[in-house]
Image (tube, rainbow, N blue to C red; front, side):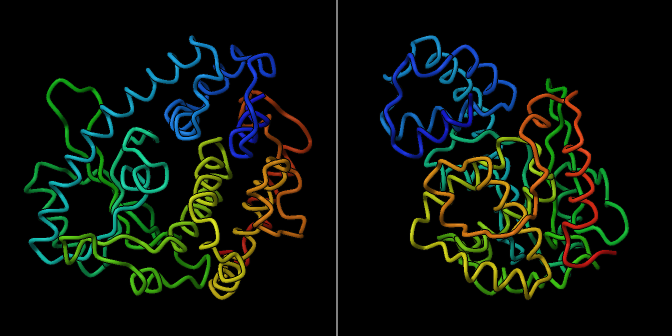
Length: 316
């Protein structure tokens, strides 16, 4: 039910109330916690009035919750970024509130639960000192050859600590020939800062595709991120260049698999035509495996094999 609904939104089709079971749609949306994204999309395309009042109320409530949470995370992130800027530490915020504001058009349009920052590996010690002086403690430095570590800060009255993930790469070492320097070279300072930057649109899309692959597209949120970026970028997204870079980086199978699955699932969405994927990567993927956690089938098993053993150009 949720797939044709999302396709109708992106295809600018009319949303007649008798075309969808909105109670079932509510269950699907709640399952994936995508109330803010759906509300933002319907609002942007002036389609909210085409849906039942109870449905709009449900989406709006989820969006308001996301706004409060994201506003808090943005304020906390800006405090950290201000300290990094003062210490001349190059930093790129990943995903999170900036992604929501840029590509979905509003702070409340995509909920997030932590702060992800990309830094230069050489600055790890300086960052460790800054975060610890700011009340954070190192929670995990990750397994060997990993690409990020986590810091947490316990907040008064909150059972959930504030988490900051510090990344110095976006892929595990020895699984590709990916060079993070290409991301830094095309990054642009966020005014009025000099050292706090954002990724280029092309590299942000590349990042979100690789992020979706790493999680084996285990939530509809990944698909919405990819679709939304595709619509936002329109003619700016160069898929041929993306595949060329992915081939050089040793990530081509991951990128093609992710976009192929997206195209298969949203086959009636005009946006997915841009991906031009013609291969069998991800052919065993099934939507039911992420919607129903107890769902089992031969295809689910084959997808796991495909993801683990054939989803990389290069393995450990």
